[in-house]
Every structure is written in C-alpha cells, then in structure tokens.
Length: 406
Image 1 (cartoon, rainbow, N blue to C red):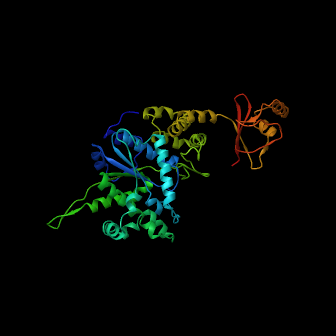
Image 2: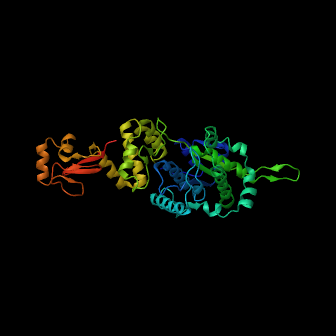
Image 3: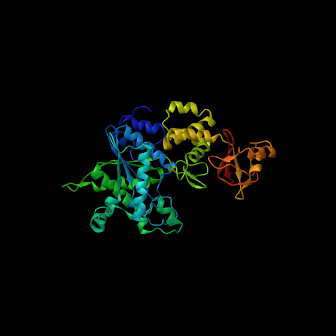
C-alpha cells in the first residue's frame, strides 16, 4: 500500500469511494493539512463486529498509518439506550454487564486483527462513553450544559423519528435523546482530546451533524457589543452504505449477520459469503475493503469470476490471516450436495453427487475402510444416514461437502 501522509490520505479515501458525504469538503481538506484526531463510535450490542464494519476499520487503519490519531469509541453508555436509527420499534435495554462484556470482546477482536493498533507509534485510543455519560449530572451537566442547545422542532424532522411518527409508531423519550447523547460524545472528545472529526456510516449522518452543531453552539462566545464570536468548526464524514440490488445491507443474510468472529462465522463461510456476492458489488468492495492498488483492481475486475475469488481471499486474509484464507480458498473448490432435514443414505449421497459411479463401488469403498467423516470415524454401513453439515472423505484428497437444503 502506498505510503500516505496527513493530506493525501483524504484524496486516497475519496478515490477509493470510502467517503460518501462531509459537512464541509473545503474545510475538511484544509484541516487535513495537519494531524487530526478522528473518532467513530461502535455499538456494543453484540460481542463481535460484522463484515459490515470492515469499511470503518479500513478507514481507521488508513488514517492511523497516515499519522492521524484515531479514537475507537465503544458506546457503553449510548449502547444501553440503543441507537434508534433505522429501527421500526424500541429496542430492548441492555444491562451494563452485557455491554461491558461485549465491549471487552470487541476490543480483543479489533486488536487481534491488527487493522487498528493500540500500541507502538501513534497508537489508537479505545474509550468507553459510559465513563463520562454515566457520571454526568442530569440537571447541571445535561439540561443546562447540553440540552438547551437542541431544538425539538428540528429533531422531530430527523429521518429516524419522522418516519416512525408518521406511521404512528412509538418513539420513547430514551430513544429521542439518543442523538443528544451521541452529540455530547463529540463535544466531550473535542474538549478532552481536541477531536475535530466524527465519522460513521451513511445512515448516521443526522446523528453526526447534531454533534457538529453542538460543538459550534457550545463554543460560541458572546462579545461585549452584543455580537458573538463564532464557535469552533468540527467536521462530519460518512462512508457509503453498501447494499445488494434488493436492498440487503452488506454483512446481512437470510440466516443473520456475517460475523468477524470465527466461532460465529467460520473463515470458510466468510469466504463463501464474499465469493457469492453479485458482480456489481465486487468491484466496489475491492476498493473499499482490501489493500489492493486501484490500478490492480481495474485489471482484476475485467474477469468477474476472478474478481470474486480475489475479493473473498483478500478479505478473509485480512480478517483471519493468510493461512485461513488459503484453506478457505482450497475448500471452496470441494463439490457439495444439499440434503434435507431427514438426511440421505451414504450410498445415495456418493452416487447422486457423481463422486462414485455406482452403488457397488460405494459398498466396496466402505468395506475397505475408505469412506469416513473428514477427521472422524469411518463408515461401516453403506446405508448409513448422513446429515448436514459435514464433509465426507471417500479417497485420498477426495472430499464431498454435505450442506443443508435451503
């Protein structure tokens, strides 16, 4: 990857399509002339990040390598409230114990991947907003210091709330205050860490702008002549929201989320998810979530099949390491057969899949001890019922993957 500096990293992010919107293109470009402190918040409602978070981590990595200070903010306080963005109903409240356990798991995961460094030169900082939100007083710190700067008239126009109110859905006061708390984070980090940029997904635009405005209003100074000295300018920066043609968010499937935790989504399953993405997403994702140079990507995408394989390999390597990516790529070529919940007799499985030519060949292989569950017991009965998921080894290097019928 080409070495970035304070300034040209912004141009690189734009060239790769990693920036969707900013609060001020000119102001941000000027600010990037020197080292900045930049933060993003992460919701600790789960004990693992998903593949959808990779874009954020890649941007943080590029910014950190270019010499900017990055803050990885765990929403320990706001996470207990729950972000209402994109939600059609009020979310169940999380306990502090659950949030703390999830936050610890996410930190370990991020550190293990190595995309964001918390040690060495220019280390990133991981903070938990429960450390300050949980200590502020309601009357003095919240109402007088922060809430007075917000207009209810403007907040109800936020897409998050406007849609639900129009549909007659309930919006709790707790949820209504979420953007205020997120804005408060920005003001706190501005004051304590000189943080001047908040970044996040495209769907967070409204929430991030609330923070930009709060910092400006809270730092505006009255002058003796009745005028005011303008407040400080801070910036909002969002990433594009990646969806399939039918509107499904990156990292979501019918079975649920695609996790970065190998115990939740194996390296093979991550590889399979990526290699099956539609062509129109592959070119974009090669720019967004890999380290491949743009010139190389331009050549790769000329062959759509190759582009899918490269995307799957490169991302799996970033998340789980090169060895895991190589194993996943090798396993990807293994033939597979679908079976229902009732399973399928071994003899039928091997003949129907085309792995062996006849029932008699299956019987002979079983009698010779040549058919087994991979890394498991040998089959002694050719009529044994095989259930998914498993992988059958029926010869040296000869494998058949058995998967559940969708």
